[in-house]
Length: 209
Image (cartoon, rainbow, N blue to C red; front, side, top):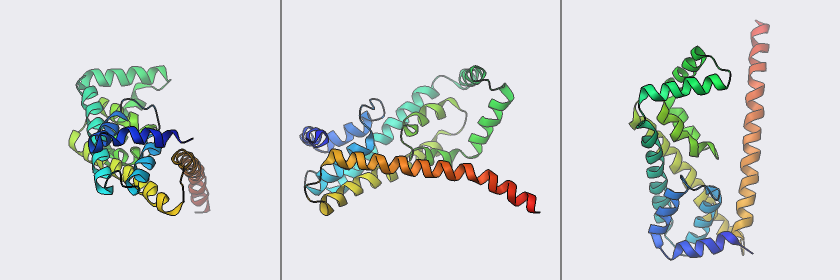
């Protein structure tokens, strides 16, 4: 049984429009993790359902437009209301106003790098445009960096599915998606553990001086 392959058969009927619709919908209806769908799209491309560049371009365009729609929907609330909301939310979390302001300032200093990086993190990538829309700052830089991150995310998994289809005989799309999830979780756990070790190393290094 291969649920993802069955879903791909439905999307194939609509061609590149179906791919674009998936890219757009994954921002608003996260029923299924996007990496699983992108793997399935890559496998379908290898089987001749779409050209690989078409699959990449259509899904990336749809997802980038969905990201922009989320961003501007929240940006329309206005800067003053957004800042009041963030301060109130920080109060609920036990974070004083001055600390919220420092966090906002830190985000603005690293806005472009964070916008790119957030699009490479499962789940976080879906909420990042909404959060960024609450914060003051230029829109174009955020959207360009987010689009670059989306392109890397989509290209990575579509390419992995394409290669897997040629490397693994009778590849089960759903099984490949589960394997990808395991790899993602392992990578995130490794990054988290390394990040926790860094402060200790810095303190040790400072003490040796």
